[in-house]
Amino acid sequence: MSTAAIQEEIKIKKQQLVEFMDKHKLAGVLLSLHENVAWATAGQVDMRVGIPAPTGAAAVFVRKDGSGFYITTKNEAPRMHDEEFGELPFEPVIVPWQEANFAKAARGLAAAGTIGADTHEADCTLISLAGLRSQLQPTEIARYRLLGGITARAVEEVALHLEPGITEEEISAMSSSLLIQKAILPSVLLMAVDDRILKYKHALPRGKRLQRFGMVNLCARKWGLVISMTRFVHFGPLPQQLAKGFDAAAKVNAALLHATRAGATARQLYAVAKDAYAAAGFPGEEELHHQGGATGYGEREWVATPNGAEIVMNRQAFAWNPSARGGKVEDTVVLQDGAIEYLTETAKFPVVETVVGGQSYRSAGVLLK
Image 1 (tube, rainbow, N blue to C red):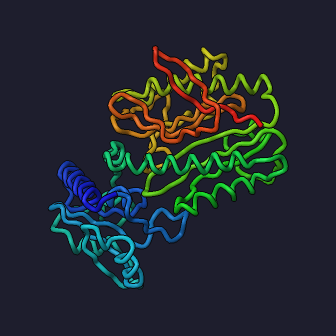
Image 2: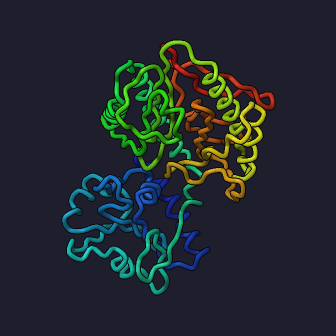
Image 3: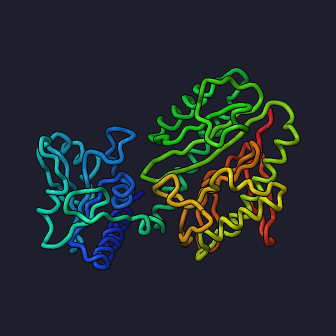
């Protein structure tokens, strides 16, 4: 992506933050969470040191006048300049590592007034940028397409190499290796085999060896964005009951994609899933696990619930994950101008076509070996 495109996206993000500050009467905003820093910097900055930690080695501060800064410690400053912020329109503010109080440094940069922070900081107002992150810029969608394609190819390669006898941990290791080689960080690894897939909605690897039925289920992050997807392999013919579960999941997936339109609410989408399960012969299945929802800079920015008030926006990403008795469908898509764009299609997997309201929707089928 060109420097000009990155600079323009950051300019847009700063303007969004200025409008946010005007609305909430703030003198500045301090962003420390990885997802918010990635969003504000057009996906160019990764401050992560401890992988599970929600914050890293720097923070971004934007003042009400639109000027931007990055605050970091003296020991982290060289890398932050050379590899993260050096080409971006943010000025450095360097503090001793012994006194790494980023909120205090931000207050020194702001005019009189309240500072908003996305983590609990003394004398700051806690803020959420989930609403700003929801509607993706064209440059974000371009990065998302690339991430989706790379991740899908990695998942496909893992699935093609599965053989009876492989352990769930080995499936996780193979998936992680392929992603990390592309500078993509796995954030969820739910690899399972055989009866554990049928028994548990979130089956973490527990050492079981593949006999006939294997699942590659992961979330992966790069540029702050998250891809979610699941694929299945079965050795020999698919048992009838399992085939019914996959058929139902595909029907619910299609119903959800058809209903994912700007202005739809989370509660309406939940009702769509509920009705689709009943129509597919699995009434009440929606009670056993969430159906997915909006994604982007979080594995799920929100999920569809019976009383959910969240609203679908144009240029928003979604990862629906309907499941029924071992069958499941999960891909990442983007809603753009009334059309669904699939980001994680896998050419070597069978495709299940489901028509809803005169439109055809695709779900990945089970790869039979």
